[in-house]
Image (cartoon, rainbow over all chains, first blue to last red; front, side):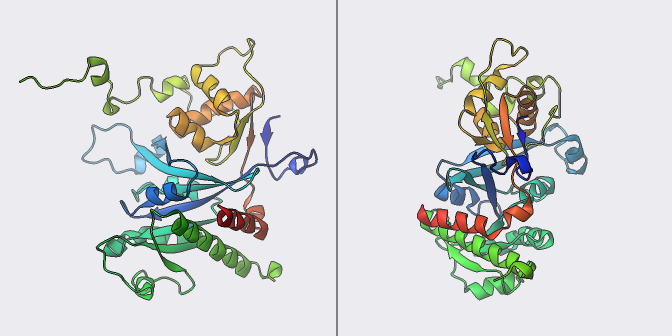
Amino acid sequence: MGYAHSDGADQTGTTGELMPTAVKILIAGGFGVGKTTLVGAVSETRPLRTEELLTEEGVSVDDLSGVEAKTTTTVAMDFGRISINEELVLYLFGTPGQDRFWFVWDELALGALGAVILADTRRLADCFPSVDYFEKHGTPFVVAVNCFEGARQHRLDEVTQALNLDPGVPVMLCDARSRESGKAVLIAVLEHAMRSHRAMSPATAG
Amino acid sequence: MAEYEEPPEVHWVDEQAGPVVRPYAVTRGRARPVTGKFDLTSQVCTVRTVSSQDIGLGPEHLAIVTLCGRRLSVAEVAAHLDLPLGTVRVLLGDLLERQLVRVFEPRPAPVLTDDSVFEQVINGLRAL
C-alpha cells in the first residue's frame, strides 16, 4: 500500500527509509502588505500559486450578491518552499486576503507550526481579522511590521497596544524584500511557537 | 485606425475565458478522490512508471507521474499543473489506487510540536 501515515508503527524507520516530513508557517496580513514578497524573499524558488475552486458548501456561505453572473469563485494561495534537509521541507503559505474564505484558513492553519502577521502601520486595522483568527485557534504568531518607505515609524509597543496584543506576542520590524530579514522573522515565530508549546505542556519543559 | 491586433489564436483564449478543458472534465465529473486525504503539504512521489496495462489514465495523470519523480507536495503539484487543488486530489487518488505514487501525510500535531522539529527548522533557516 502506498499510503503512508507517518504515525504508523510500520513507517517509523524500521526499513531504514527516510520519512519525509513537511511543515508549514502561514504568512497573513492585509491586502498588498507584502505577503507574497516575503514568501518569495526566503523561498528557494519563486512563489507558486495554487487555486481552490469554491465548493457547493462554500458558495452557500459566500456572499455573491452583486456579482450573480459569476458562477465560480477561486481562492488563490501563494506559497513557497524551503528544503531544510533531505527529509524536512518547510512550506510558507500566504493566506488568501479575502477574509470570507475562512474555510481555506482552517485547512491552512491545521498543523501549522506558527504564523506571521505582516503589518503596515498605515493600515493596522487590516491585521485584526488575522489576530482574531490565530488567537481563537491557538496558533502561535508574531507581528512583523513591514517597513514601507514613507510610512511613519511607529514604536513597536504602540503596535502592540493598537492591536491589543498579548504582551508575550513578539512584534518586530522587517523588510519583506530582504531574505535575511525574512529569515529572522521566521526564526522568531518558530522560537515563539516553541516557547508556547513548552508553556502548554509543563511536563516536558526543561 | 491601424491599431496593432494580437494574432487571433492568442486573442480568444484569454484568462477570463477560463481553462480550455474545464477542471470537472479532467476528473470526469468526480469531485472526491477514490482514496486518500491529500493535505496541502502531503508529499507525493512516484513509485513506478506507467506501463501499457495502466489504461484509463489521462494526460494530467501522466504529467503528475513525471512531475513526482522528485518528491513534491500536493500544493506544488497543483501549482505546476495549473489545476485547482480539488481536481489534483481526484487525480492523485486514481494514481494512489493504482499504486503509481506514494503519499506521505504530514505528521500528527503531537509529533510536530516536538522541540526537535522546531530546532531542525530553526537551524536549517540559520544555515541558509
